[in-house]
Image 1: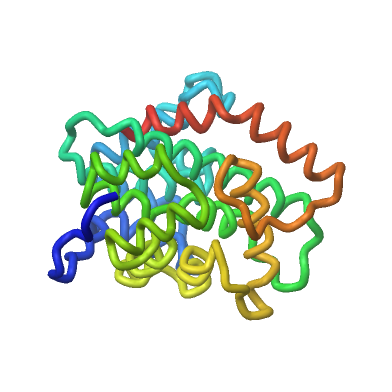
Image 2 (image 1 turned 90 degrees about the horizontal axis):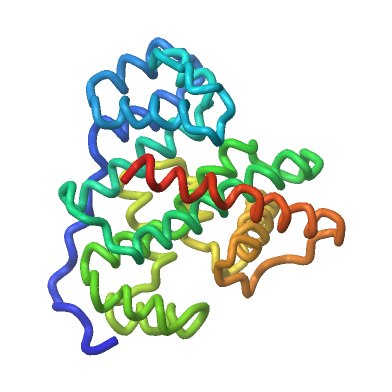
Length: 265
């Protein structure tokens, strides 16, 4: 991958204020559709994409969702936050053409998010397992460090993604950026004030093993990541029937993941 990028400490990209407010509203126990809509209305590009997603064929609402309020209710918290985060992060490209490598990371991440939510609904609750929506966001953001690296070295890092995976890729990331994408993602999530549980899952999705109360979430994330085509060295064994169902689910929903990227790009 060449010599490390400069020795100066890189500036962490800030989460757009409206995106931070969307996440904060949903994190509050008393959030309402009206509060969510009030935030979304301050950012027309994000609001229009929420409506576009609600009217996409993958949600089956028949293309008749005309108000932002109805769209947020029908899509649910996870999908609305996914749109806001996706649009916010893609603004690094200033409205220009987004590199193909970025699309690849986002499609994989959305598939991983779908897999996390699917397992969260199929597995028995207990043993500290988070909610399906919380698991969805962990899957969506687990590779956010790769997005950051693509903004810092678009051509070089895109080439690295095409040449290596798993431990070799993370070693190359450390040599070039001083940390791998998991550590970088955890650093971003911390700077953005995301929940501590989410930060830990992003930072440690390739290991080491997390503390006991996060172990169930980490196993779900690792399994979904592997099923979505990611580097799954830590992926646990799922029951045979569940593993097959997960694979079939993600194969069926890949067009939805690709459609999600087209919505936010």
